[in-house]
Image (cartoon, rainbow, N blue to C red; front, side):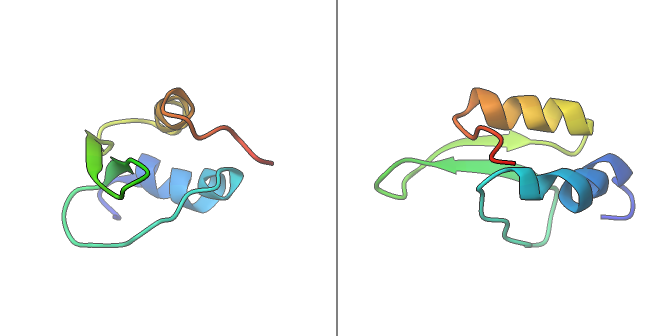
Length: 67
C-alpha cells in the first residue's frame, strides 16, 4: 500500500465516511460490488484513482456518505 499513497489516504481519511466493509487481501486495491445474493457483480481497480475519484465511484455505486 505504500506505493499507492492516494489509496492509502482514502483508507485512512475517508473510508470511515461510508458504510462499507474493507477486507485486506494481497494484490492491487479494488472495489468489489456484490448483489443481495452475495454474487460479485462489478470490480473496479482503484490503484490509479485519487481520493475524490474513489469517493465518487462509491457514491455512483450506491454508497452515500454517512458522516
